[in-house]
Amino acid sequence: MEYGSAQVANKATLNLILGVFLKLLGFFVVMYTYTDTNPMKARMAEESLRQQFNISVSLLRDEAKGDSPLNAHQAMQKEGRSYIAIREALKTQLDFLSSEYRADSNMLMLSIPAEYVVSIDGQSPKSPRFALTLVSTLLKQGNDKTDYAVEVVIKGSAESELTRAVSIFVQQMIAVDYPESLLAIGYEQSDAAPVVEFHITQMKKAE
Image 1 (tube, rainbow, N blue to C red):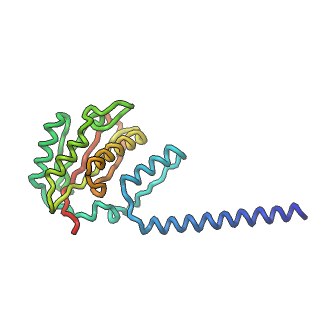
Image 2 (cartoon, rainbow, N blue to C red):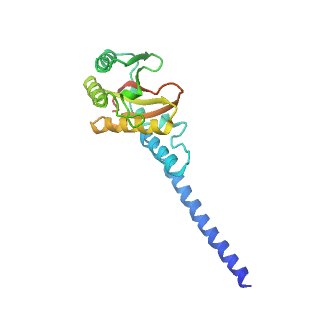
Image 3 (tube, one colour):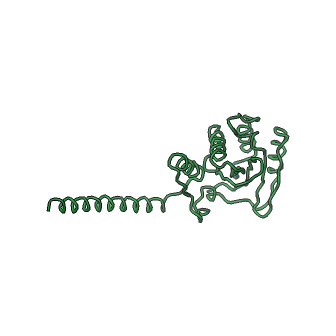
């Protein structure tokens, strides 16, 4: 009889714990629904979960384009002289930089071998001041009406290491006063040598 009572008590305790867990889970789901997600911090949190608990999750909603802080700004509709100035200024700093203007998205894409701007395999970047150079160039070309949104995308096969490396690069940009709200990071699988792409979009400042 006592054994049966213990079973009932254990079951009741388990049901209570499960009920509390489900309520907390529901609470955080609701909180997440009404919270703007910072893409950079979300990527860093995803990477932390993968490293510490071997859990793969996506903290960025598929429809998150409408929630992105970059969308508080409005993209300009044509390639301005400032894109040319940015491209030329950065090319004088780094010979390996290639560039492309994508008219369909009004975006200037700069591409650089990853080892020049981020730490790979424990090796320091070959151009350690590139983050500072990029920030100073973008701030110089901006004005009281426009900003530059920057998505830093790294391509390669070692996702964990490369995502962490590009997160550190973005933190370096923030450390020298580039607005966090204008920055995002991304990763693309590639079997080629790692490359960092900077997707730069001239934006009208939010009113």
